[in-house]
Image 1: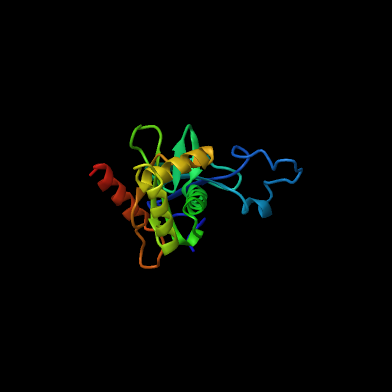
Image 2 (image 1 turned 90 degrees about the horizontal axis):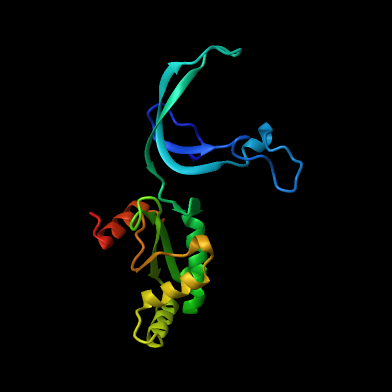
Length: 206
């Protein structure tokens, strides 16, 4: 309910941008993206969390005096993975890997749960795509057993990792895979703070 609502002074929120400096127009279309009607339909979420405080007053304009805002960076939303200077959505990566894994296991998508997290592990400048995969349905568990039995001594994690690295698109290739329960909140949604804690414990980053 609070998505795309402006934050008050000192209140943490996501940096969202739009305008002529972000997008020049729609591909293969003469439609003007900068009308008031169109402005609400597109934006770029940078995935950075910051807050602002009132700065010094700027020069007066025709509309009257205006104040500047100083922005202070806090953190980055873990729902993005940064690789090679590009931002990839964790949700989209998760959907693609869920489809690949369910096919490999011979089960339905709902038989597995996937959570993707971007973490700086091997580099200070790029994220590792850390994937948590949970086998929920019996079909998924049976599929994992079949993979392991025919995997020449490899673990289910190693086999699935190899399959996903081979079949996933460039931005969705996983760097690390953990086969365990996906932490969820009381509403049943993935709890990203608990997923991050899970990976920090696994990687010994505490």
